[in-house]
Image (cartoon, rainbow, N blue to C red; front, side, top):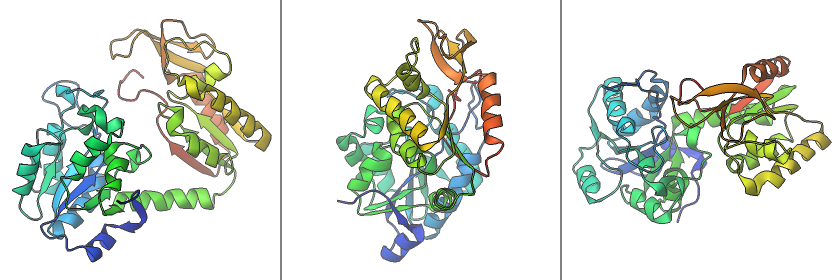
Length: 341
């Protein structure tokens, strides 16, 4: 079995080790692009799609059968018509100037049969991998089904999701012998390594995202490097609960409350300024039509949930970062998929 994706090897190294002509290469990309809100759904910002092109074109040029795998939005382990990959495939086809075979599923015998029929140097896009619960749970059986679509070749070029231990980012690497990074992954890691290993001080870091559990190692590592750490996203409510605040129906990982307290104490001991939002945009439900309002961080109503940071917090964060010479940002500050947040 293989371990995690090698950050020391990229697709050019893969091409030296394996004759890619005719080989099925599974490529994890981040094609989670914003779409129009009504049908026909079309891509409104293709930045992430364009970022994937160099890796795709390299593999095409080597004659590989390029099998793209990505998520789109948060379907929560069920099929959501508005989150199907069809508009992504259509736009990607335009960018590549060649056909992209859009498949109706991401696993199964029918998918495998269509992949086997692909011409050398062609591209296929699997259906939204998060339609299956096994993706985010990193289920070994689901990972095995994904891995079976490849000829022991895997490329991770999805830098934005690489920190998540999901089936398509971590699980498959345990089953695929040749697992390497793509061009985008390589570029981003070089930037990140330079910023963290040799930062120009003062250094500030913005850390967002839904869960503390997925950011613990990042936060602990940055306590050794940063002067300022700004926290946002869903994780903040675990920190608020650790401080004794009521968080209503906001996302909280109760098993990490004590650890959140420990992190705050460590930061104080090391002289690191950890800044949490002072005002929160709350809503009565997780929905684009929800009622919302801004409240202070210790005044979240019992039946409401926090979904974004407020304007006062934004201004505070700006002021805190204004003196920093190096800034690293990882994760969103709120529910960016819904416009009002």
